[in-house]
Every structure is written in C-alpha cells, then in structure tokens.
Image 1: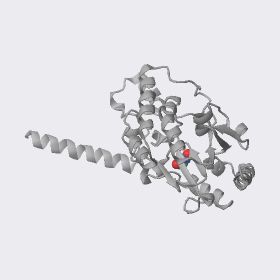
Image 2 (image 1 turned 90 degrees about the vertical axis):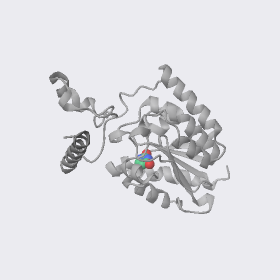
Image 3 (image 1 turned 30 degrees about the horizontal axis):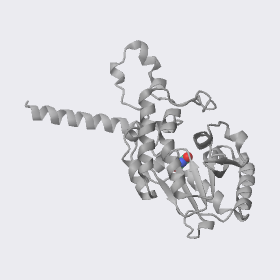
Image 4 (image 1 turned 45 degrees about the horizontal axis):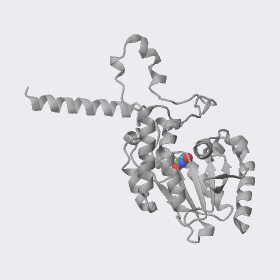
Length: 278
Ligand code: URA
C-alpha cells in the first residue's frame, strides 16, 4: 500500500463515518470545536455531553447564568476595539455588510454557513432588532426566515407593515445583534454581544430608523444592558438617542400563544407612535 492508498483509505473511512452519523440523525454541529469522544478519559466522558454543548442552558434557566458584565479579558477588549474601528470605517449599509462579513475575531463565524446581515427596506421607519440567526437563517443568509420569522411577518402585517413595502412608512427592516448562528442555537454570550455591539450601533446610525423595536432579551440587553424583556415589554424607552420599544420574541409567542395578547397591545402602541408626528 502506498501513501496514496492510505489517503484514499482515510477519505473513504471518513466519508463512511460521516454517512453513519447522518443516518443516526446527526445533521448539524452544536459544539464550538470537534471533540473526539473515543479519546476522552473515563471520568470526563460522563460529563462530556453537557460540556460539549457550550453554554446551552436548561429550559427555563435561559439568561439566568449570564452576568451583565463588560469584557475583562484583554483579548476580548482588543476584539471590541477592533470591531469599533472596523464599524467606524463603514459609510454605507453595503460597506458595513462587507466589513462584518470580513470580521474574523468572533469565533461564531467559524461555525456559521453564512453571515446574516439584514433584510427589508433600508429606508423603513422601523428597525427590528432580533437576537441571532437560527438554522434556517444560517442556511439562507437572511434574518427571520424560519418559523419565528413567519410569525414576525404576520405580526407586523397586522398593523400594515412589511419588509417588502416600498414606502418607508409602511416598511420594516430587520437585523440581529449577532450575524452568525451560535452553535445549537445556544444563547449568545455577553462577550459575543459586546464584541458585535459596535456593528449594531453603526448599523442603526447608518440606517437611521425613526424607532427601534427590540425583540427578546438579547437585543434588549445589547442596547440597554438591561435584562428581563417580560418586564420591559410595552414600555417605550430611548436607546442610541432613538425611541425604542421592547417586545417579546416571536419564538416565545410560538411556545406561549397566550402572550400574543400583550404582543398585540405592543403592536398597537407602535402603530400609534408611528402615526403621531414625532
Ligand atoms: N431569531 C432571531 O432573533 N433572529 C433571526 O433572524 C431568526 C430568529
């Protein structure tokens, strides 16, 4: 057997192993880095499934373990500074999209299929800020295209707003705090949010919306440092010198249809704010 046979043997063995995993239903990566479970010592093997899931939190414990703290690690501080400098260079939304796509300091990018920048009408009066791409968004490269996105579209259509509208007063524009999907849809970490925040700020400044709607805990935290969207929802506040309305995330409405009543009240509040002159 020559070297070439060895390489081909490895290739076929790897392909067969991959096909076997796919047959078992393993169709996506959920860890930050690959783990060879056959190499793990016995003691860590038992604990490995949770460890490999990064910061995936137990249902109901979401966010509870995430402290609101600015980065303290020098590498993280440097990354935030690099993001700030990169974001400042963007003089248009198109340029910002390219700069974000070329930003390599966020580990999430390595596991993502696509950089998910924005969707909708950039001239819209309303900017909707979500959390991060999910599986469908990662595949398609556009925010809010999965089930939560369909709910979002129906919600805003109910007050006459859509992504496809040409008139700025009838349009919406959507983007996320993170442009890359966190593995296994885990909650974004504070360090990741801090790193990408300069881009969010620049995005909002360039798009220049009349109002910002933050959907869920992550964008609320990213813009205000505040947690607890259930408490904050429905109350207008100011972020980045603009009126901001916190709402619950459409994915939450899918799991808790009863909360649609409050979401509808929030949409009506948005509608009357947009109809008012200021
Ligand atoms: N959830 C979000 O917060 N953003 C998306 O783009 C999709 C789902």
